[in-house]
Image (cartoon, rainbow, N blue to C red):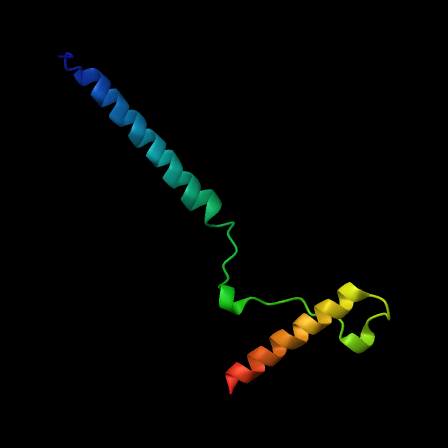
Length: 80
């Protein structure tokens, strides 16, 4: 059997407590104040040009405008 070493137990507990205090301090004073608070259902999308404002061969602009139109239609349909 291994001998019981109370000093090592106390030191390891103090080390764990010190690390926990550091973690709590960093979380409360650094992470939380710098966090942006928004809910996923309140997300605001950047408005893109409509299809008639896109250039003729700009496929990405046309795709973004189509996705925006689809999203707007979905929102309008679910609000009624």
